[in-house]
Image (cartoon, rainbow, N blue to C red; front, side, top):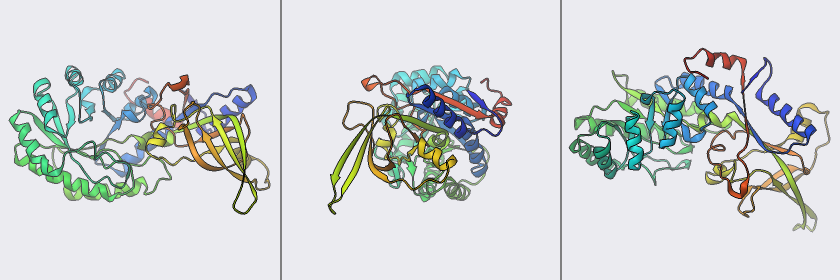
Length: 417
């Protein structure tokens, strides 16, 4: 981890790293991760959502540096598997600070959670309750409900969540099996674009809370899931989501003793922390005659990264990418005013031998050359965890940086970094 000198930004670090690569002839792609961005996002969340305790979604970026940073800030953790539970426990996080938020768990994973004292876990169907009654009757169950996620780029309602009309039956079943249900959870979908979905989901959560209390469950936890944007330019903004969430919480879950409100932000914390740099290894120019009879230049660039290494999430969830060429960036920021360069329709091909490995199918760029670098900001989410070894390309090296100011904040915590 590099601690940046005063006045030096992660952007400066990236540019210096690229200059060194160019001068030394190195071409391997890499990721720069600014942990100061994670600290900033945490402070913003605490400021805008003061009633909400974050449980970071480990699946989003499971690097120990990110987890250490979040643990030092007091964040808790949302785990989806046995290995994620072990990873979080290995950095000194207590079992009470973990929620096992995968509604469908195999028996051996349930037993593993029981052995390590991870009690909070979600469910959305009767068969999950039957498993819990047999293998972990002391678990604290949280009923995940189905909510409107139609405005999300990555909806989950088709796969997870109990319908509202089935909740009473599930809560009665839990009673019959002597299981404690302590709360309700939901997820409005990843990269959600409708803040009002939070308002309706919180209202639905209140209704299920009341049903649970009526049936004798001691309902004390509301989990509002993820869905908060991580890209600073995303619209609606995080602050707009926060306004809707706070209003709904105050209306449907006013302050009361013993009530805990949590969330499971993932990409919110880490998206803007990661900047990816990759190199052009081959260039192909194809000239085509347009409808006006003029010859138009189309360019294919073959990169040394792709959907099987860092870009799978952008393909699966249709994440909008924003590439910038390093040479163009340098010219724009530091060089003298230059004549406007023509921009050409281009394709960015990934590194593998698969024809579907396309990073961007149509993007306009100034003409670049073999050996030039292309930079992608906002690549901190899922670029590390969705890696595949297909075609033998290695996992990217990650360079972690943090400012002195943010480093001092972490050092004042009780977590050993």
